[in-house]
Image (cartoon, rainbow, N blue to C red; front, side, top):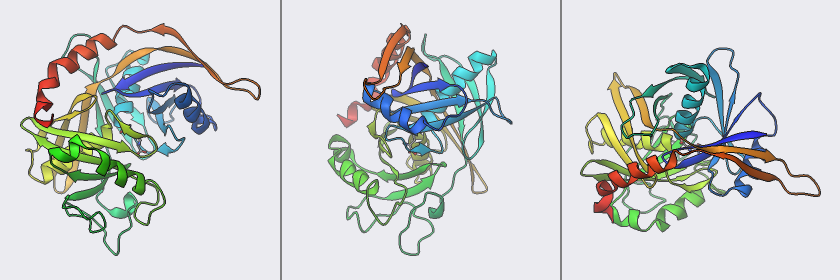
Length: 315
Ligand SMILES: N[C@H](CCC[C@H](N)C(=O)O)C(=O)O
């Protein structure tokens, strides 16, 4: 089986193109064991109503309804396959518009993707806490810190906390609660992606502990949800929000009209290489072989170097 290794903001995936299979969860788990640098599996298959269908599987084998960084990589793959610059990608809960965007840094392919639908209804995560139907910019009594949290589905589930520099420098608080919310707990029966957000002079910084994966360098839906929450909290103006993360930086466009939100995530879609995968058998383990390494990563690293000053205030 041929696989393409890709990343958006260093959120790294294997991308498989072919018809839907029942063993995608197992494949995601096996690939993560063979290459611990990946955060999941993206699959691209035919769609009856869009240019292609994307599914996303976390490294624990669980399927999510959406993946923002992954959708940028799928957008590039489908646009280049079809020779187009705009496309529609079918995802679990919505058909989303994607488009090629202007290269900001030489050699860094840029794509913009729609993030939708958005819901603050706790039932849409799901989150269960007493009789509450929403939870917006309020400390959670059972967490016991004075962190204003917001629960939002985009449509995968996110809990976003606004924190100071101290909780960014020491991720143990975030790790403790993320592990709890993704284990046996009464609040998030399907788990949740937990992000801690800190305002910067230029935009915001987001670190995410992803459901089904753990800490990643970036989580596209979390960065977009965090940009929306930051606009609603008045931390940054609505419009284009620069979102920094351990894996780089993206631009999130946040527009609001009559209580409806239009969200767009723009950032890199980088190819790392083509791999051949042979599944394991009873007598031999699986094998992953690099067939052709791409030459795109140095350009992305130059981009990271260029923006590193923006987060100096957190160090
Ligand atoms: N861990 C997420 C799926 C991957 C999302 C993330 N990689 C992104 O870029 O949005 C979840 O279980 O909802």
